[in-house]
Length: 363
Length: 203
Image 1 (cartoon, one colour):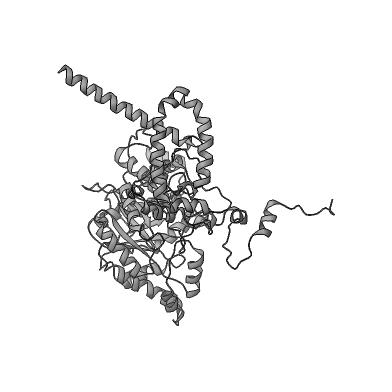
Image 2: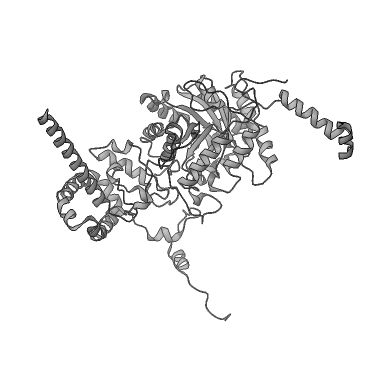
């Protein structure tokens, strides 16, 4: 099929969309969410390599199933390809990345530079994070920067976008057009403070939030109740973090070693009791999606399937959250066809033309 | 030189002294684990309401002394005041002398003690027992800040979004800065009032 899809610039897939009234970015994710559709985002496992093909291959398995792909910024404080690098590759191919910015590794000078650079490459969504502590990663001896925190980072991006200024007050010639995101963790103490913290993030500029892995639906339901009472669901799109657990052993390991992930005993018991734990983990993820999508105020899911990325499509398909809608996927376009034809001519035909011949034929 | 004893470093001593328990979180320096005690800091959080009241009186007193500070010169008085402030707040709150104190907005729990130096609330990594992700023996300063702020009269101050830390103010006296700013604001208000009165009289 040749042609352009909904939410695609007809002049080229790598170009930003036309601005719409009330939208702050020119990206697809904001359009999907503001249309009231149930959004699906996922996370790209960043390669430990300098080969762009690694990024494209990992992005390809999400084609047609997700609305945006998170380009993680050294998640868990482990070294990987940078989020800016991944975004540069993905935007070139027309994907809608969500550029994660962690405060752990960069100070305000570097971060503001990256925001401009990312926006110039066509990144429409940025997710502002504090970042895991360096002790969690493969280089615990690194210097933790934490110059800004997630809240002041959100505010910095908002100031750059809305006021067209750096944090210092210096003017930008062209401000970045961004859809700003943040992370929430409703499952960590102080539980009473968590809804208010979401309010703070909204005040600082958050337009959408992605939550930490949700394995405890009743706990999330109480959180959402509080958030709805405070009226935050009208000001912000909430995407629930979900993901398949590979086995009961992995679940236990995650629970004791990865900071901030709450897995109740019932989940581990369910996994332990299953014949095929991997399959049960996937089914559990689908069940959780089906439960949370019914909670009012939930605008989408964020599927994090670390090292099980091939399951994302199945999970999205079997949970039926897209309701028949197909998110953008990479397709051949008319101009691609033209380039392919011309390239085919060069590649396949045997042309042995010397410069002298070319001059002769030109006359 | 092969017969010399292996050098005993501070790290070796600390490793030996570290309590041998079943609970061994990965990658945490034992040096940190033996040297820390949080008793005074936690006392301050428990008595946040008292300290809030005291701080308000104390700020008023400092403002009353503004003519004195101005007479001596804020620059000259900075040294001695900072000396006292650093030690008093260091004992009470484990102060890190960021120079822009927001204790009254954080339930008397100093946010600069957070290993990530978060000034706007807890990160997502807080352990289920309310301890820090980075330092497993330390109660999360923001869990404590939330508890402390709930005891205080101005318990909504924790909800304001704080600006990023100005690193150029480190190791300066927050007390004097706040006093100087309050005095300047008071003078500006007085000048505006006088100006209004004068224009009112001439009209």
